Image (cartoon, rainbow, N blue to C red; front, top):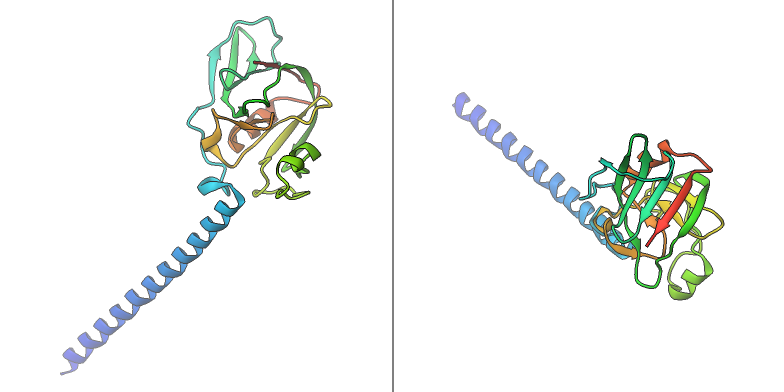
Length: 200
């Protein structure tokens, strides 16, 4: 009788633990679903809160050029950014570029570097998208991502993104976006004053 009672007690304990585990999973699933909904509302998609990984890996390539080592060359057509290295090489990154009507070319210098930059959409962007916030503090939800390098006196930047699926695409309003991992890597390799050559 005692043995049967012990077995019954053990079985009840096992059932209780199972129900508790299921309840915890349900709660976590609901929270995750709510989180995904909020990301979709913000327009970020499922990778909005994470740096993610680009399908275009950062790699060292042969790159014969007359540009001095340390120069950044943006090839809009290739949707690649090259950091020129010595000995005819370059570090190549995948980037997102300006969509039709927002592509440009020219030579500038990096005039500022910021970690987790704040974002104030320019008036031209507000005119096109009046639903945008007028200012957003820096952080993981900010569309400028983990780092930004500002180009001359333009409105354009090389910046991070929490949407790795857009790397290699023409989606921006003229800025060049990279994964947060890649932009952090590039940020650590260049300084204010670095020459940036943008080619169409």
